[in-house]
Length: 334
Image (cartoon, rainbow, N blue to C red; front, side):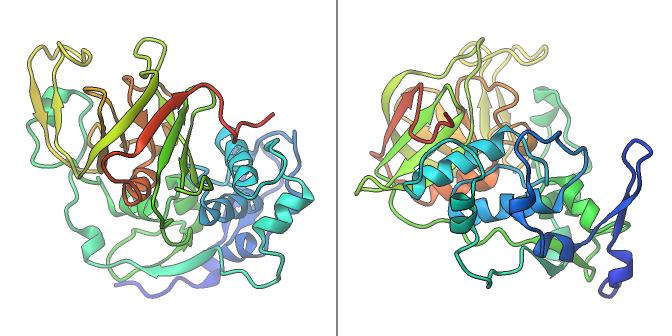
């Protein structure tokens, strides 16, 4: 077994186009200033400490940026807009001083963004060798679990695999290893009364009974070929670790599969770790095996979230919750 990694080994040298190298260390993220993030600045190709910090703070506040990867993309802008809406600030999706002040808690004491974690034997259990693309091959498997410990940890801590590897260069993620992960905070709690699925902006907004905004999530909501439903529907129920029934006549055609298939449960299954069933037949809000593709690749009509966001939302809904499909939300950047 390995012991804790010395700080001298935690630095990752990043070379960008032959430019001078720079280091990425846990302390760099913990002490980064999100005020240093410049609007319109070219997006970095590698994880940026300040952006990683911003993403974690947004996640803790209930406005999910999706995968925490240290890169400033559209999902981060939408998360900023969602945070503004939750805090009754002018909604423009911009990281201005007022937003920064609210995010940082108006005080110097903030829980560390990056913390150490000891890999356990449980983390290394239930892994599979690979996940085939073909649904027919998937149906032959016992489960669709994680393919390695790094993938399992990246989902548990809401991280992109590249950021996890950047914080732990050379780690084998073996039981007993001490690694660095981000602390995205506990799941949101509360009772959701109404959900809005904004097809235009790619966001799911969860509202409490008093009308306040409980949580905001980036989402893939249908596609041009397979649009999401319109209008108002309701939650029928929640299934965790669901099996997936593939029916090419009722749903869509995948590869050369012409027959009904039962695809086993697992985080790498077609609908991830949770299915929130809707009263509209065959439609639901669910997780995904590819969190980095949320709101970047279309779905087959359903509402797709990261596994952790879908699980959080599932913990706050009950049958009868209204789900309204709209084309513009209060959290839309203007």
